[in-house]
Amino acid sequence: MSNVTYLVTVSGPDRVGVGAELFAALAQVTGTRGQLSDVAQITIRGALVLCGEVTVDDTVSADDVRAALASRDISRAGIGVQVDRVTPDESGEGGRLLVTLLAARIDAAQLEGVFRAIASVGATCERIVHLASYPVDCYELVVRGRDHLALREAVTSVAQENGVDLAVQRAGLHRRAKHLVVMDADSTLLQDEVIDLLAHESGCAEEVARITESAMAGDLDFAESLRRRVALLEGLDAQVLDRVRERLRLTPGARTLLRTLHRLGYVPAVVSGGFVEILAPLLAELHVDYLEANRLEIVEGRLTGRLAAPIVDRAGKARALERFAREVGVPLAQTVAVGDGANDIDMISVAGLGIAFNAKPVVREHADAALSVPYLDAVLYFLGISREEIETA
Image 1 (cartoon, rainbow, N blue to C red):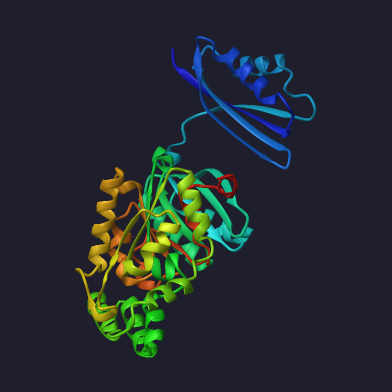
Image 2 (image 1 turned 90 degrees about the vertical axis):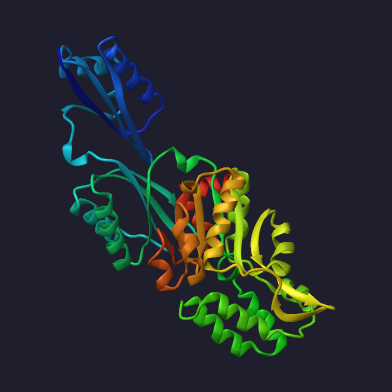
């Protein structure tokens, strides 16, 4: 005796109780002769498509399945019922990946390009979830295919051509486990570059800005660039630090991101090439307990133009992420790193999910995902968190 599989598809106007009727009929079919092997449902504006797959022994025919459905009178009120015998689709075998698409607005032509890319490598889309429609459009696709590398390359290429931000990740329950989310500060959590604000106070803004730009583009070693910039602040009154902190602007969506992470049990952290003296009081207000950043040397109330501890550079940021993960008790696969500059590359590379946020091309090349929208809370969509969940949290 062998097994057969039947796919039952119920479609039409949604109504109360149709799910209970379908599963009662499928329970009647399976009994001691088989099992329910898969279920899927989607409802859009009252239009229902509900599928149930049963695997039973070959004494059960398609007519037996139809008779069980008829006994429950599911077909009334304009609902159609279809029964198909199905066989495993070898082209669909393989593991699942999550493909997240995000843009200010995603249209049908952009989706066509992505789905053609998926088909071009022999993969199929099993499920589509519309995570958000404002302030950005975001869809999450569950894609099954054998060659994950080819799939990643194909969808990344077409997403770039169509102006769509993209993340490709492995599927699994780890998406809902506790995560450590580590962010850069300057131009990521904050709209500002702190040292540029300090330079403005000391009258050397143009010179510092030129060094900053070279460092963020990867043209100048970060540690050396930081020493040069801090040296230009020699003699600055330490009281200026309070004034600069008051001028800091959070990136749009930053408060929403932090609030949602806290309420969903995730752990936010900041690893920055900036300065503890500026960031620590601000992060205490935002209830961020994990911070790694540089320290300014202050003597008799004035900046000396030197740093008071080893520099938190590109490699130091990655080490800080790994240390925080150990302290929080999560594997690196459940860490997320978000940054914009060249000194974030190691941190982004070592994290389970590295996100380039409005970043330079050199950073995007090393990231798993990239965001070009100005809202930091868009990071939540790459964790599979919908707009509805964000607002509920």
